[in-house]
Length: 455
Image (cartoon, rainbow, N blue to C red; front, side, top):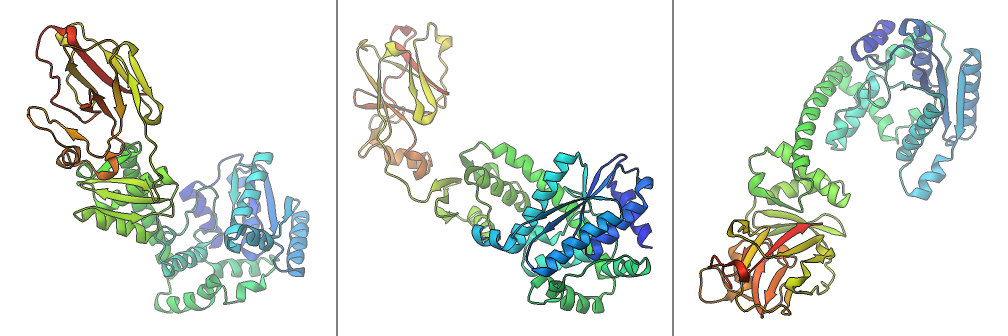
């Protein structure tokens, strides 16, 4: 039965290809020794080339760790297999890096396996993870409320898991029947470790309710992966559309379902800040997306997410005092470069009326009859007391009120360049021109145009 299930995994998931070199993550325990036995037995059937073993001694159990290492050496010698062994004080390393033992051990194991694979031209790393491991993993992450972990693991991703359809009891029975020797880690029976508690206490109770628990959870795992992969792909497509945006307009996102929206926004935030959002933060963000008014959420000590009107943006939690940026230029300069904004402004005199493109986001033109060659224009940011003459109006109004009318968020207003001439605002660059110096005549001699370009 176990051999049929082993071959079923190969048939269903195409774990190995012809002439593959395989590295087995070999602890000396029953799972990895039975896996090695099966791979050796079906080596020719699978068309494998070479089989190697790799054992990382975590140095956590003193003499027992050395005993396991010695067993692995002897096992390899007995079966004429090349084995790679490395000793690493995981406890010391975890303490130094202030991380959990489990996390560091897992990371170092795969680092070790990958290093061997590169040097030995190994195509597949095989582990002894089995169906009961999958059930334990899913229960473990369910208890801790981890959505991604709840799916468990796949039979094939960066490693292959040929025992995917096989229960732990079946592995133990097979080892006994075929006189396969192995070592036991006594810490596997200590219930002060959460996984062991699940294995020894929780799983048996659940199997009293559902004797077919491992199969049931395996089916659930496979469907969860199918659903999640679809949602992740769709969310990634949405993320690619917003990836380069500094400000997200919620009106453009309102028709997307929340399942895609939170995934895409999470990716966008990670792209901008490197922050992996917690589930609590994601729920907070979904809540403010639906709310009215201005809101903000702390993402970390360095960043916050700000919602203003129908826009969301990422801001520094502590804004440094803004340095004043001011450029003076003349029409003879042809262009002015603003490195702080990755922008340049081209200064043009159109030759014919058709050349004038009235586009407040990129180009604006002004007719200044008495413009002198040595007169300067100023490019700056807003300041207290600024006033602006709306096009078609006779009286100026506070620039602050203009921004409010345009529904430009407060956080964006500080970064909008202004072109000023003779103490009058001509253009809120990229947003709105003023009513000063409109183009009225067909004679273009006195017309000057400004065009913004990203650099």
